[in-house]
Amino acid sequence: MSKFSDLNLSGKTLKALEKMGFEEATPIQSMAIPVILEGKDIIGQAQTGTGKTLAYALPAIENLKGENLQVLVLCPTRELTIQVADEFRKIVDSQKVVAIYGGQEIVYQIKALKRGAEIVVGTPGRILDHIRRKTLKLGSVKIVVIDEADDMLDMGFIEDIEAILNETSAERQTVLFSATMPKPIMDLTKKFQRSPIFIKVPSKELTVENIDQHYFLVKESDKSELLFRLFDIYDPQSAMIFCNTKKGVDDLVTILKENHYSADAIHGDIRQSQRDRVMSTFRSRNTKILVATDVAARGLDIKNVEMVINYDLPNYNEYYIHRIGRTGRMGKPGLSFTFVTGREIYKLHEIERYAKTKVEKLEIPSIEEIESKSQSVLVNRIKVELTDENYKIYLNKAKGLVEKFPEVDVIAALLKISEKNFRKREFKAIEKVREYSNESRQNNSKKYSKFGKTRDSYRKTVRKS
Image (cartoon, rainbow, N blue to C red):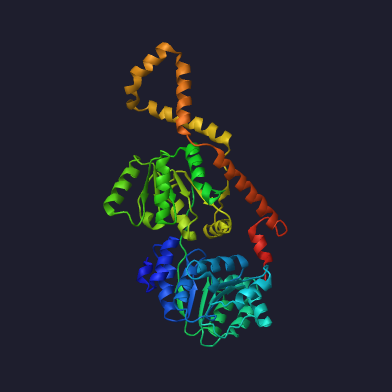
């Protein structure tokens, strides 16, 4: 993979990417960005979640000149439209980007367009509506991006796309992305593109066997508390936690150490000597928790990782596979948990489709569950200690206690003390997390009830919007 700094991007764009947590370009980005920067048409074949949004967004932003409308992105659904517009807004002034889709009052979109937009992202049906109303003129557009073209075909948008392209200049640059290339899509490229460069990212074999995958709905501010609860319940002897940014990794390690967890960090700013030390202590289990970014963790050979936690939902779908693949190796069972906030649930469903897997939703652990499980964990820890000779240095003190008190009473008292030390935090925050999880589930149920039980059934109703 290439670094973004090798792709002839401006310093301003590189700073924005670093803030977003992107350290290296994905294959589709490495191949597509230089070609689009040169103004050439491309046909990009890549699965959803491989980073194709930034593959066209970055060069489109780099080529912005003037203040009129220059970039038009066509998406099949309102969800993707909102997602793509948000990606653009992370890099450029949000006022330059307008999202146009059905289901939103058109008057708001008209006002936004009148304020001036350099980038418009929208669904074909609503784009055509604005064209007919003369509230959107495409004569100044320099680049048109057709995203997820095969989905457009399935939803009957091809004629709409042709009508929109006919409203743009014949000198425009046309970029098309599609997971598959059926004949109608190829016919579209022949009609509207000029000597396009074909770029293809081959699909990878995805393996998630032997891994129990779960997710929680949680507020960003409550993630650390949920993390503590999971460690209290499962007591992993070897766990990896993934964050999207180097700062996120450092901050989480600080929080873990402050709460008496054995944790270390690994990311792009860690020196090689320190990296070697961290990996050595983690492999020997002197450090139980390794917190890492995706790039830093790539290529690490680590055996017997009991648990993987996606503290941040990964930027790209394929990263999810790489992350959870750290556990469940060599036929051993693995366990993964993903923390999902707000509208990220859509991204998780996208990951499920990409990986052809199912991630099970879990309710936030209750106080009773935590107390019950933590007691079991303590008992198991004692059993482990009894197999080790090191506990014998405490035999004289133990004999002194049992001479004064019944043995069972001594053990019960020690269990109580150990449990208090084991669970130092209060339970108030976790109850807020549970309330949020239940509230989000109820809201989503109401939102999609008239369309069916799943987001897929909902999306099928969004046609020509």
